[in-house]
Amino acid sequence: MHAPRTRVQRRPVHGVLLLDKPLGLSSNQVLQKAKWLLRAEKAGHTGTLDPLASGVLPLCFGAATKFSQIHLNADKTYETTVRLGLKTATGDAEGPVVESRPVDCTAGQVVEVLDRFMGPIEQVPPMHSALKKDGKALYEYARDGQTVERAARHVVIHDLELLDMQLQGEAPHLRLRVRCSKGTYIRTLGEDIGEALGCGGHLTALRRTATGPFDATQCIALDAFEALDEEGRLARLLPVQALLDGHEAVMLDAEHAGRFLSGLRRRGDWADKERVAVFGPVPGQNADTPTVPPVLLGSAHTMAGELIPGRLLSPSEIQQILETSPEPAT
Image (cartoon, rainbow, N blue to C red; front, side, top):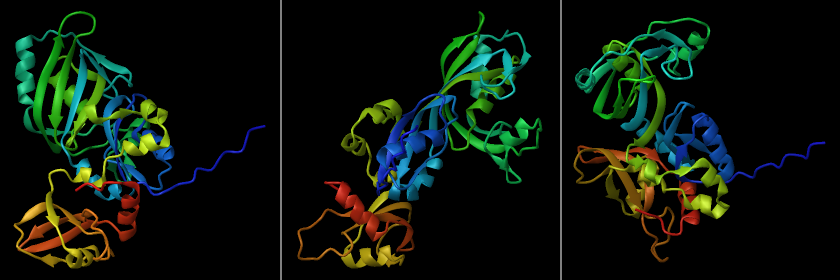
């Protein structure tokens, strides 16, 4: 007879966990595991990694989910291995080989081809992807044996570095480091490079080493995170404002802070800025009480001398953050 399952008592948790996603698990599986370990009420991630990919996966909890879109749009860095000479149905090692060709390119041709993929390029999204067409994911069409027309997408390859090259032997391959814009499919890039070399290719390894300001050295492995006690897990969370890297900081006084949190625009002598992080005193704080450092109120942009609210924290979220963060950061 099975013992009854213990119901997890959820609680408000706010912050960002930088996780090193392991191979074999989907981004959502990792997210749900971390959410369960933290007993968090609300969680989300900042863009998926394939199960066959590992690396940097920022997970957002509580108020941090309001700013996750910022990192969906962030530049990413990957390290990948392209197996030359074999083309698969999925563009990676998961699919069956559909074509085999000899690899007879030279090192000089490899360098020349890689140069061609630098800068703005167009990619046709792979059929084995979560991109939707007519409300249905492309991989669902692929599973049914269908190929549908996909529009090319504009992406930017900021840097394409050749880390290693083996053009002879049983497993010719290229190892690459790619820094790219949002929406870049590394599987497609690997396939396109293979086609340009005349031999085809597919990915055999993929690791994300950075996304926006976060890199792999800041991340914790899922098993290491699970091994921590509850206090240790909470200590791994970065503050919500870690997602607002590169935003101009604006400080408001109590009167302006209260109105800003109500969604009202404020006037001031601010220069035009697209990305602003707004800080101010704790809502409802009595002027006679000891001063608490300014807290994050939300995001905004400034235009024509106006501070225009974006995503805002609620007073209850701010209070919960203060209760769990002994030293609120600015």
